[in-house]
View 1 (cartoon, rainbow, N blue to C red):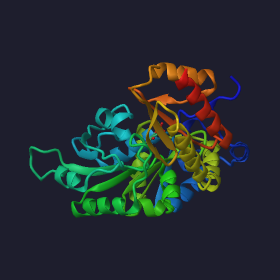
View 2: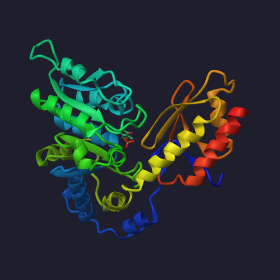
View 3: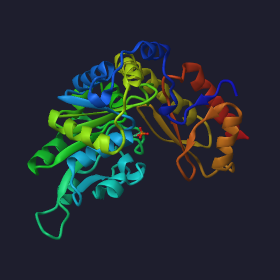
Amino acid sequence: MADIIDLRSDTVTKPTPAMREAMAQAKVGDDVYGEDPTVNQLQELAAEMTGMQAAILVPTGTMGNLSSLLAHCDRGDEVILGHLAHTFLYEAGGMAALGGIHPHQLRNQADGTLLLDDIRNAIRPDDVHDPPTKLITLENTHNRCGGVALSVDYTQSVVEIAREHNLKLHIDGARLFNAAVALGVSAGELVAGADSVTFCLSKGLSAPVGSMVCGSNEFIKRVHRMRKMLGGGMRQAGIVAAAGIVALQQMVERMADDHHRANELAEGLGAIEGIHIDSQDTNMVYISLTEEVALSPKDLLARSYEHGVKYSSVGGRSFRMVTHAWIEDDHIAKTVDVVRAAVAG
Ligand SMILES: *Cc1c(COP(=O)(O)O)cnc(C)c1O
């Protein structure tokens, strides 16, 4: 089909013409020797934009989180994280399988946060029976909680708890820039006081490949070793880093349009009988089919796709739609029309 409106995820974004051009022109070297000037430039830019000392390019967000956890924790250490955290649900259990790290899940609130008291109560005493608590991780924006952005104030409260108890704080900021744009703050303000943050270049920022890990010089040095151990040391990676630089320079502010369109989409879909809007935050819209509708969730997806609109099931009668740089205003109206027709049968 020619013109599919693909709302499954912001990962479907393809590199922009400016990225293709930058990739073609990129100066490269062997990054395992630290000699790729374009990778080095991207790393400096990422560090600057997050207010951290240093940054390192990794192939994926999953490797970014795993290498960060491995750099923060020893085998047998415990990490506190939400039961809906991407790292807990969707990263193949890497922390346990490869790091021997014990995940201590706390209930994510609907707004993506963990209750501060739950965090305090989860921190283990120094007792031979207990795995030592080493790390807290937050996710911003929170994917499974509807793409909601965690505020600067909330993050600062968790920074304080971490400091008080001598713990580290890692932020899975796969969509950190969506959060920053939505809240009208800088990425640096959102992660101030955290020990590390990962963010994806290949989601709303539209680069073809890559994520960044940012933190102190000493921390990034340890992540560098872990990246090598995990097989993520790349050679002339400047080819992909060049797109990452364009992503950070040109694709951040425009995400406000994605958020606006997600909002319009939710408004349009919300007016359809049989569709319930579960949530709308940043670039995500979660919807469900109400009980009155006889149509099966599978048939709704199939009918929508027949008419050129793709989105994902998130189980049961619920679905996720994600706006991104390839979704335009007229796609919003068309999606609403297609879903309305599909539900009406
Ligand atoms: C996408 C995502 C990641 C990492 O994903 P990769 O597909 O490995 O790049 C991590 N955390 C969150 C919240 C994500 O949405």
